[in-house]
Length: 148
Image (tube, rainbow, N blue to C red):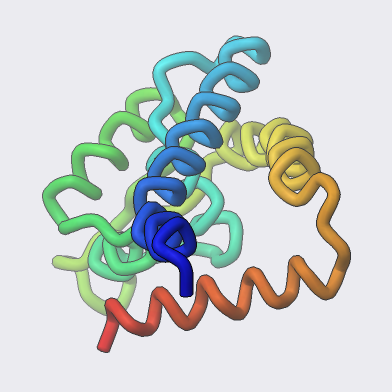
């Protein structure tokens, strides 16, 4: 492999980081246009994860968003203050708190679905279906390299 090929391979992590930053900027700008400022991408991820289930324990949510429990608690508290999520005690274990979307949170997710669709279209612009599938498979392999 040529030295320029190796240099490009070695720049992959930097490129992934840059794409992450660009996509976060894209989301922040679109959310701001809709009057939804001061949201970190982690907030959106929490709301998305909660949209997939009725409710979730804090430790489950921490795992889903790949943050420690204390960071997740701070993020969730901001969403509680904005009226987007609710916390209640588990009926089976009163010490355990369950987090769920509020009605306002469900409305927020409907609004952001449009933004998410726009992000995905931008992300995959010019890709064939096969390239999208291959790309996803490669990302999953990279992820597994770090999990093992």
